[in-house]
Length: 180
Ligand code: 5GP
Image 1: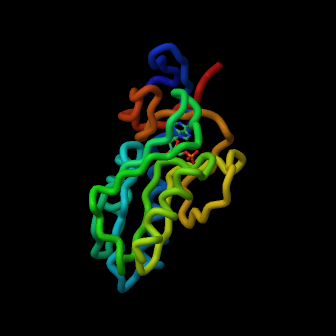
Image 2: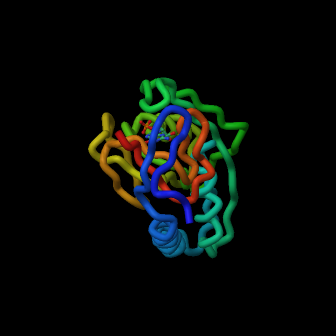
């Protein structure tokens, strides 16, 4: 059992979402994907690094033949807020003709997901959709199509389950919120 309150570097966090709730949300997304992509072979495009735990859990609930690819997206800014400038690296993934499902940790302003859509769409995938374990709908700065959302949260900074504070906390099985 993880602590209710933790300290990472100079900040205090309190437990916000339990592992079991996260697991339920992942399972629900996988069920929808299993139904929506029946007869297809989707490619899960994991956005490094934050989406790694979510992707690892998600694909094991998916019972379709599928492919796995990774891409990196970095948005620059402070440790707890993004700047809006997104740098992508796709490691030479072939998107043409594939049913791509972007796997993200969290959608906040929507700028990263929008940049991913713009970047991938020029390569003519057969279809493009996105899944995120967390979403902060009140923080959106641009409209993005997030087909599969795990859990909606208020616009506060969170860590755990892949999400970091200054690169720490990604290994926490539960999700924690900044405790002021
Ligand atoms: P967006 O471009 O939608 O504003 O943000 C996307 C990226 O910002 C996410 O993939 C994630 O890396 C980071 N991010 C947004 N909100 C949070 C948060 O609450 N905690 C952490 N650790 N990262 C966040």
